[in-house]
Image (cartoon, helix red, strand yellow):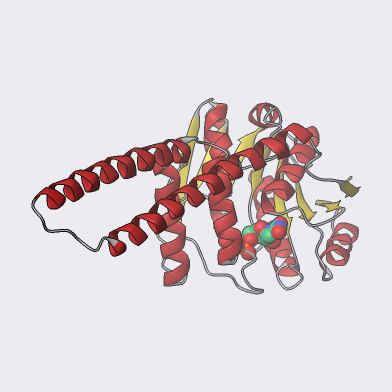
Length: 314
Ligand code: UDP
Ligand code: MG
């Protein structure tokens, strides 16, 4: 029977951890009892360099319950890397993994459906949110704008799917080959291929603790997602360049015509406007190109993406 690993990245989750651990353990026991997964299945909590008591709580859970494993990263590397560290570690001692956030906003009751779909021959099963009624209007609007933007700029992502998904060992083996430092897991997983499926669920609100994804981190993730998957923004810059050149030609013709008609404009306003406009376009372009060069810089250094301090397992 297949060993399931539930991988849970945790950053300052001391309020959530005991609750999540209990719920996940109960779910795991239920799935084992139903004969869906092996008794050796486990939950892997990844401590992403938390500054609170998260790691102490993970150790405690591990000492009290044999099915709780812990992975301590040496510092805070962010959700995407923490999850990668957990998945790559878990795949060595399991057959299939499910990744879920520590706040359990995603519905653990669809685990069974995910595993059934895995047994039906799917290597990747995406958890997809039905509606977002429990998120604040602001979170919903920004998150949805984010998906639209991403798809517009070319990274193919599953709509309303975050990092709640099942992946088989062979899908993870292939995932591990994507060694990029600029990591956007949601964009990579669809590139793996194999047979995939979706399960739908309603997203709950956070029971305890606050969101570790403030707007700043969401924007960072969006920029990461777009610039690590597509060079479309650079193409648009070229387009804007052409448009502004075209506009200046039109303005030139207009100026000539008005000169010959004798309606000589003072010209200051149009001049200053175009200076600001072109200056702006140029600065944006340079900044954008800089963004890509920065990515190249980070990639060529080939730095390790995370550092594992301790691994508590069987
Ligand atoms: N997280 C992490 N490292 C970070 C920030 C967040 O491992 O630097 C984890 C966090 O503990 C949670 C998951 O990533 O398990 C998603 O964070 P959160 O639930 O706060 O995001 P939201 O649901 O608000 O988008
Ligand atoms: Mg959350």
